[in-house]
Amino acid sequence: MSQRYAEITGWGTALPPAVLTNDDMSRIVETSDEWIASRTGIKERRISHVDVSELGRVAGLRAIAAAGLEPAQIDMVINATCTPENLLPATAGLIQDKIGATGAGAMDLNANCSGFVYAHAVADSLVKTGASHRVLVLGAEKFSYILDWTDRSTCVLFGDGAGAIVVEATDEPVGLVASELGNDGSAAEHLCLPGRGTAGQVAALDPLTAGVRMNGPEIFRRAVTVMGEASQRVVDAAGWRLEDVDLLIPHQANQRILDATARRLGLDNARMFSNLHAYGNTSAATIPIALSEALEHGRVPPGANLVFVAFGGGLSWAASAVKWGSRTTAIATSDAVLPDFDGDALELLRPNIEFFGGSISS
Image (cartoon, rainbow, N blue to C red; front, side):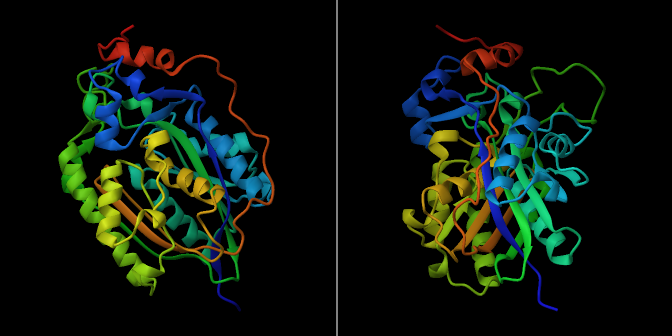
């Protein structure tokens, strides 16, 4: 019996049409385009007018079409998210229903910004053991909903969106070659969201504690160190050298973190993919969105050696070495689209901004 591998055969994204620019951000908090761009590399981000499951529906159907499959052929849906629509049911189950993956299992996975790399590793194991044959893996986030829009240190960083891949069984020696999944729970306080779970008393959300809290300098220091070290370890585990890596696709959090990680690994800009300027940090969605765009831009050659690496709340981290297959174009395309929206991002955000005591200047 031949060895079983798990190949990425489909990919897709869902990006909300409402764009929030840095100039728009200056109408919410005291900031400017120059301040944000010079410190983060971000120029704009997307704000979703739909729920997470709708983002997942569109990204999922596009990935399934790219793989040349029908939704009913998917037997597991894994949605990496830290912004589920509800604590229960799992948002993955809502996506499963919306795409028509009848009979598929469904589960959410929350490892924050590292979630997609975690979810891919889980899907890889399910396929290699024969528990599943075709897995839809998503990163779908509506991070704008959990931000404190009076906190300049966090609200300028994040955006909404979804990306998805299909992982299928194959006899070809491709797919995930090595991975590392890690976490340091003792440092969880440095990036957290208090007041949204079961801790404490049941009460209405308090604007003083309801938004994401982040110790930026500590997160930066840890991210640069861990992302570089984890990437090196999975390259070593795969039996590669750093010069064998065709493309590094890191979590899109901050351009300074990306540049520092690439320098640690000795990779130039031609071997690292970044679309941070256009979307900001979409948490678990950043890597599948970036992978899809890298494929569209011809940055992933057949047989490429890829490295995915991420760092996030928990404090979690994850890295993987992936051998790409021979196909780099979609077999088919889906007509799935997000519902029309003719408003603007600031108006979408107004209730959230006002909840935290903020306002939109003219």
